[in-house]
Amino acid sequence: MNEVPHSLLELEAFCVEMNLYLKPYARINITVPLPQLKQPGQSISNWDLMEKIKKALSPIQLSSIKVTNSTIEMVRFEAELANRKIMSKVIKALDGCSLKVVGFFEPLKVRVAEAKSDFPTRHDWDEFFRNADDMDELKAGERPDTIYLAKIPTNWFTDESESPDLPSAKILQQVFEQFGKIRCIDIPLLDKYRKQMSSDISGIRSVSFSFGQDIFFEAYIQFYEYISFVRAMDTLRNMKLVRIMDDNKMFEAAIKVEFDKTRHLSEKKIQKRDNERRRLRAEERRRIDEEGGKKRLFFSITIGYLNVYYLWFI
Image (cartoon, rainbow, N blue to C red; front, side):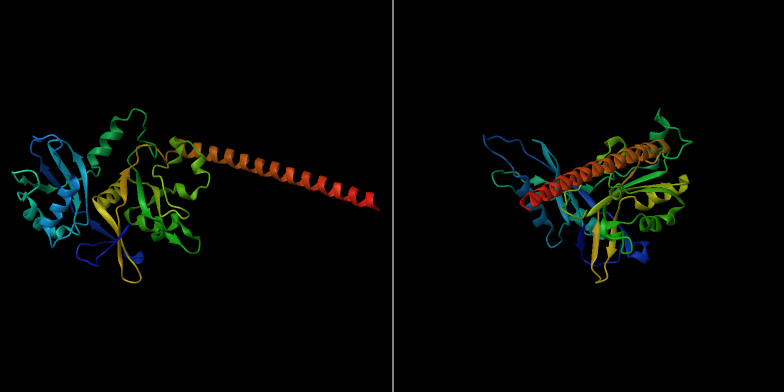
C-alpha cells in the first residue's frame, strides 16, 4: 500500500461512498541482451543496469523496478509506471536505446514492451471447471461463482461499530453487492479458530508478517449468479484498488484477485469448518475448565493449610 501523487485522471469509481476507486496497472518489460563474457571474473551488475535504465528515463521516474529473469544471455526487468498515460512515452524513450557498461566495448541494446497480463480470463475459469473431475457445477462453490481476494488493506474496510482493528464482512458485502446478490462471504481473519484448522479447509493462503494488527486481509466472495461473478472479475481485471483519504492523500493497493479453485465456499467445505470449529471450541472449554479446576484445588489446599497453621499457633 503506497501513497502516490494525487491524480484523478485514470481513476474509475468503485465505491464512491467509501472513497474507493480503481486504477489500471501500467507495467512494462525491459529486456537487456548480454554480450558474451570473454574474460575470467568479468560480470555485469543487475543493480548497475537498473540505475542506467532509470538515468536513461530521467526526468520520468519509475514507480518500481525488479528483476524477473536473469541468465548469462539476458536480464529482464519488470517496471511499473505512475500511470498508463506515460507508457508510450517511456517505451519510445527506452526501446532500442543503448546502455554503456564499464568493461564492455559494445553498448547493450534495450528492448521494451508492455507487460502481458496474468489475470485469469473467462476461458481460464470455464475450462478449469469444465475439466475438473471432482467438481459439480450444479453446486455452489464448485463452479465459477467465488472470487478470492488478498492483500486488501484492513483499515479500508473496518467498521467502528464492530471493531476498529478488523475488517468488516458487512462493509465488504456493501462494496461488492454492486455486481449482484452475494450468497456468502468468508474472511478467515475473523475466525479465531481458523489458524488451527488444516490448510485444505482454512482458506488461509496469505501469511501476514505484521506484529499486532493485521495490515492486510484475504476474503472469499460467492455470488448467486454467474454473471455477477463475471462482472466482478472483469471490473477488477488488471486494476489496483485506490482510496482517497479524508486529508485528500491517495493510496494504492496492489490487491490480488483470482477465481477460487479450492471449493472453499462449497457446502462440504463449510460443513467441515463448522465441525472443526465446534471441536476446537469444545476442546478450548475443556482446557479452561481443567485449568480452572486446578486453580480452585490449589487455592482450597492453600487455604486449608493456612487455617491449620493458624489454629496450630492458637
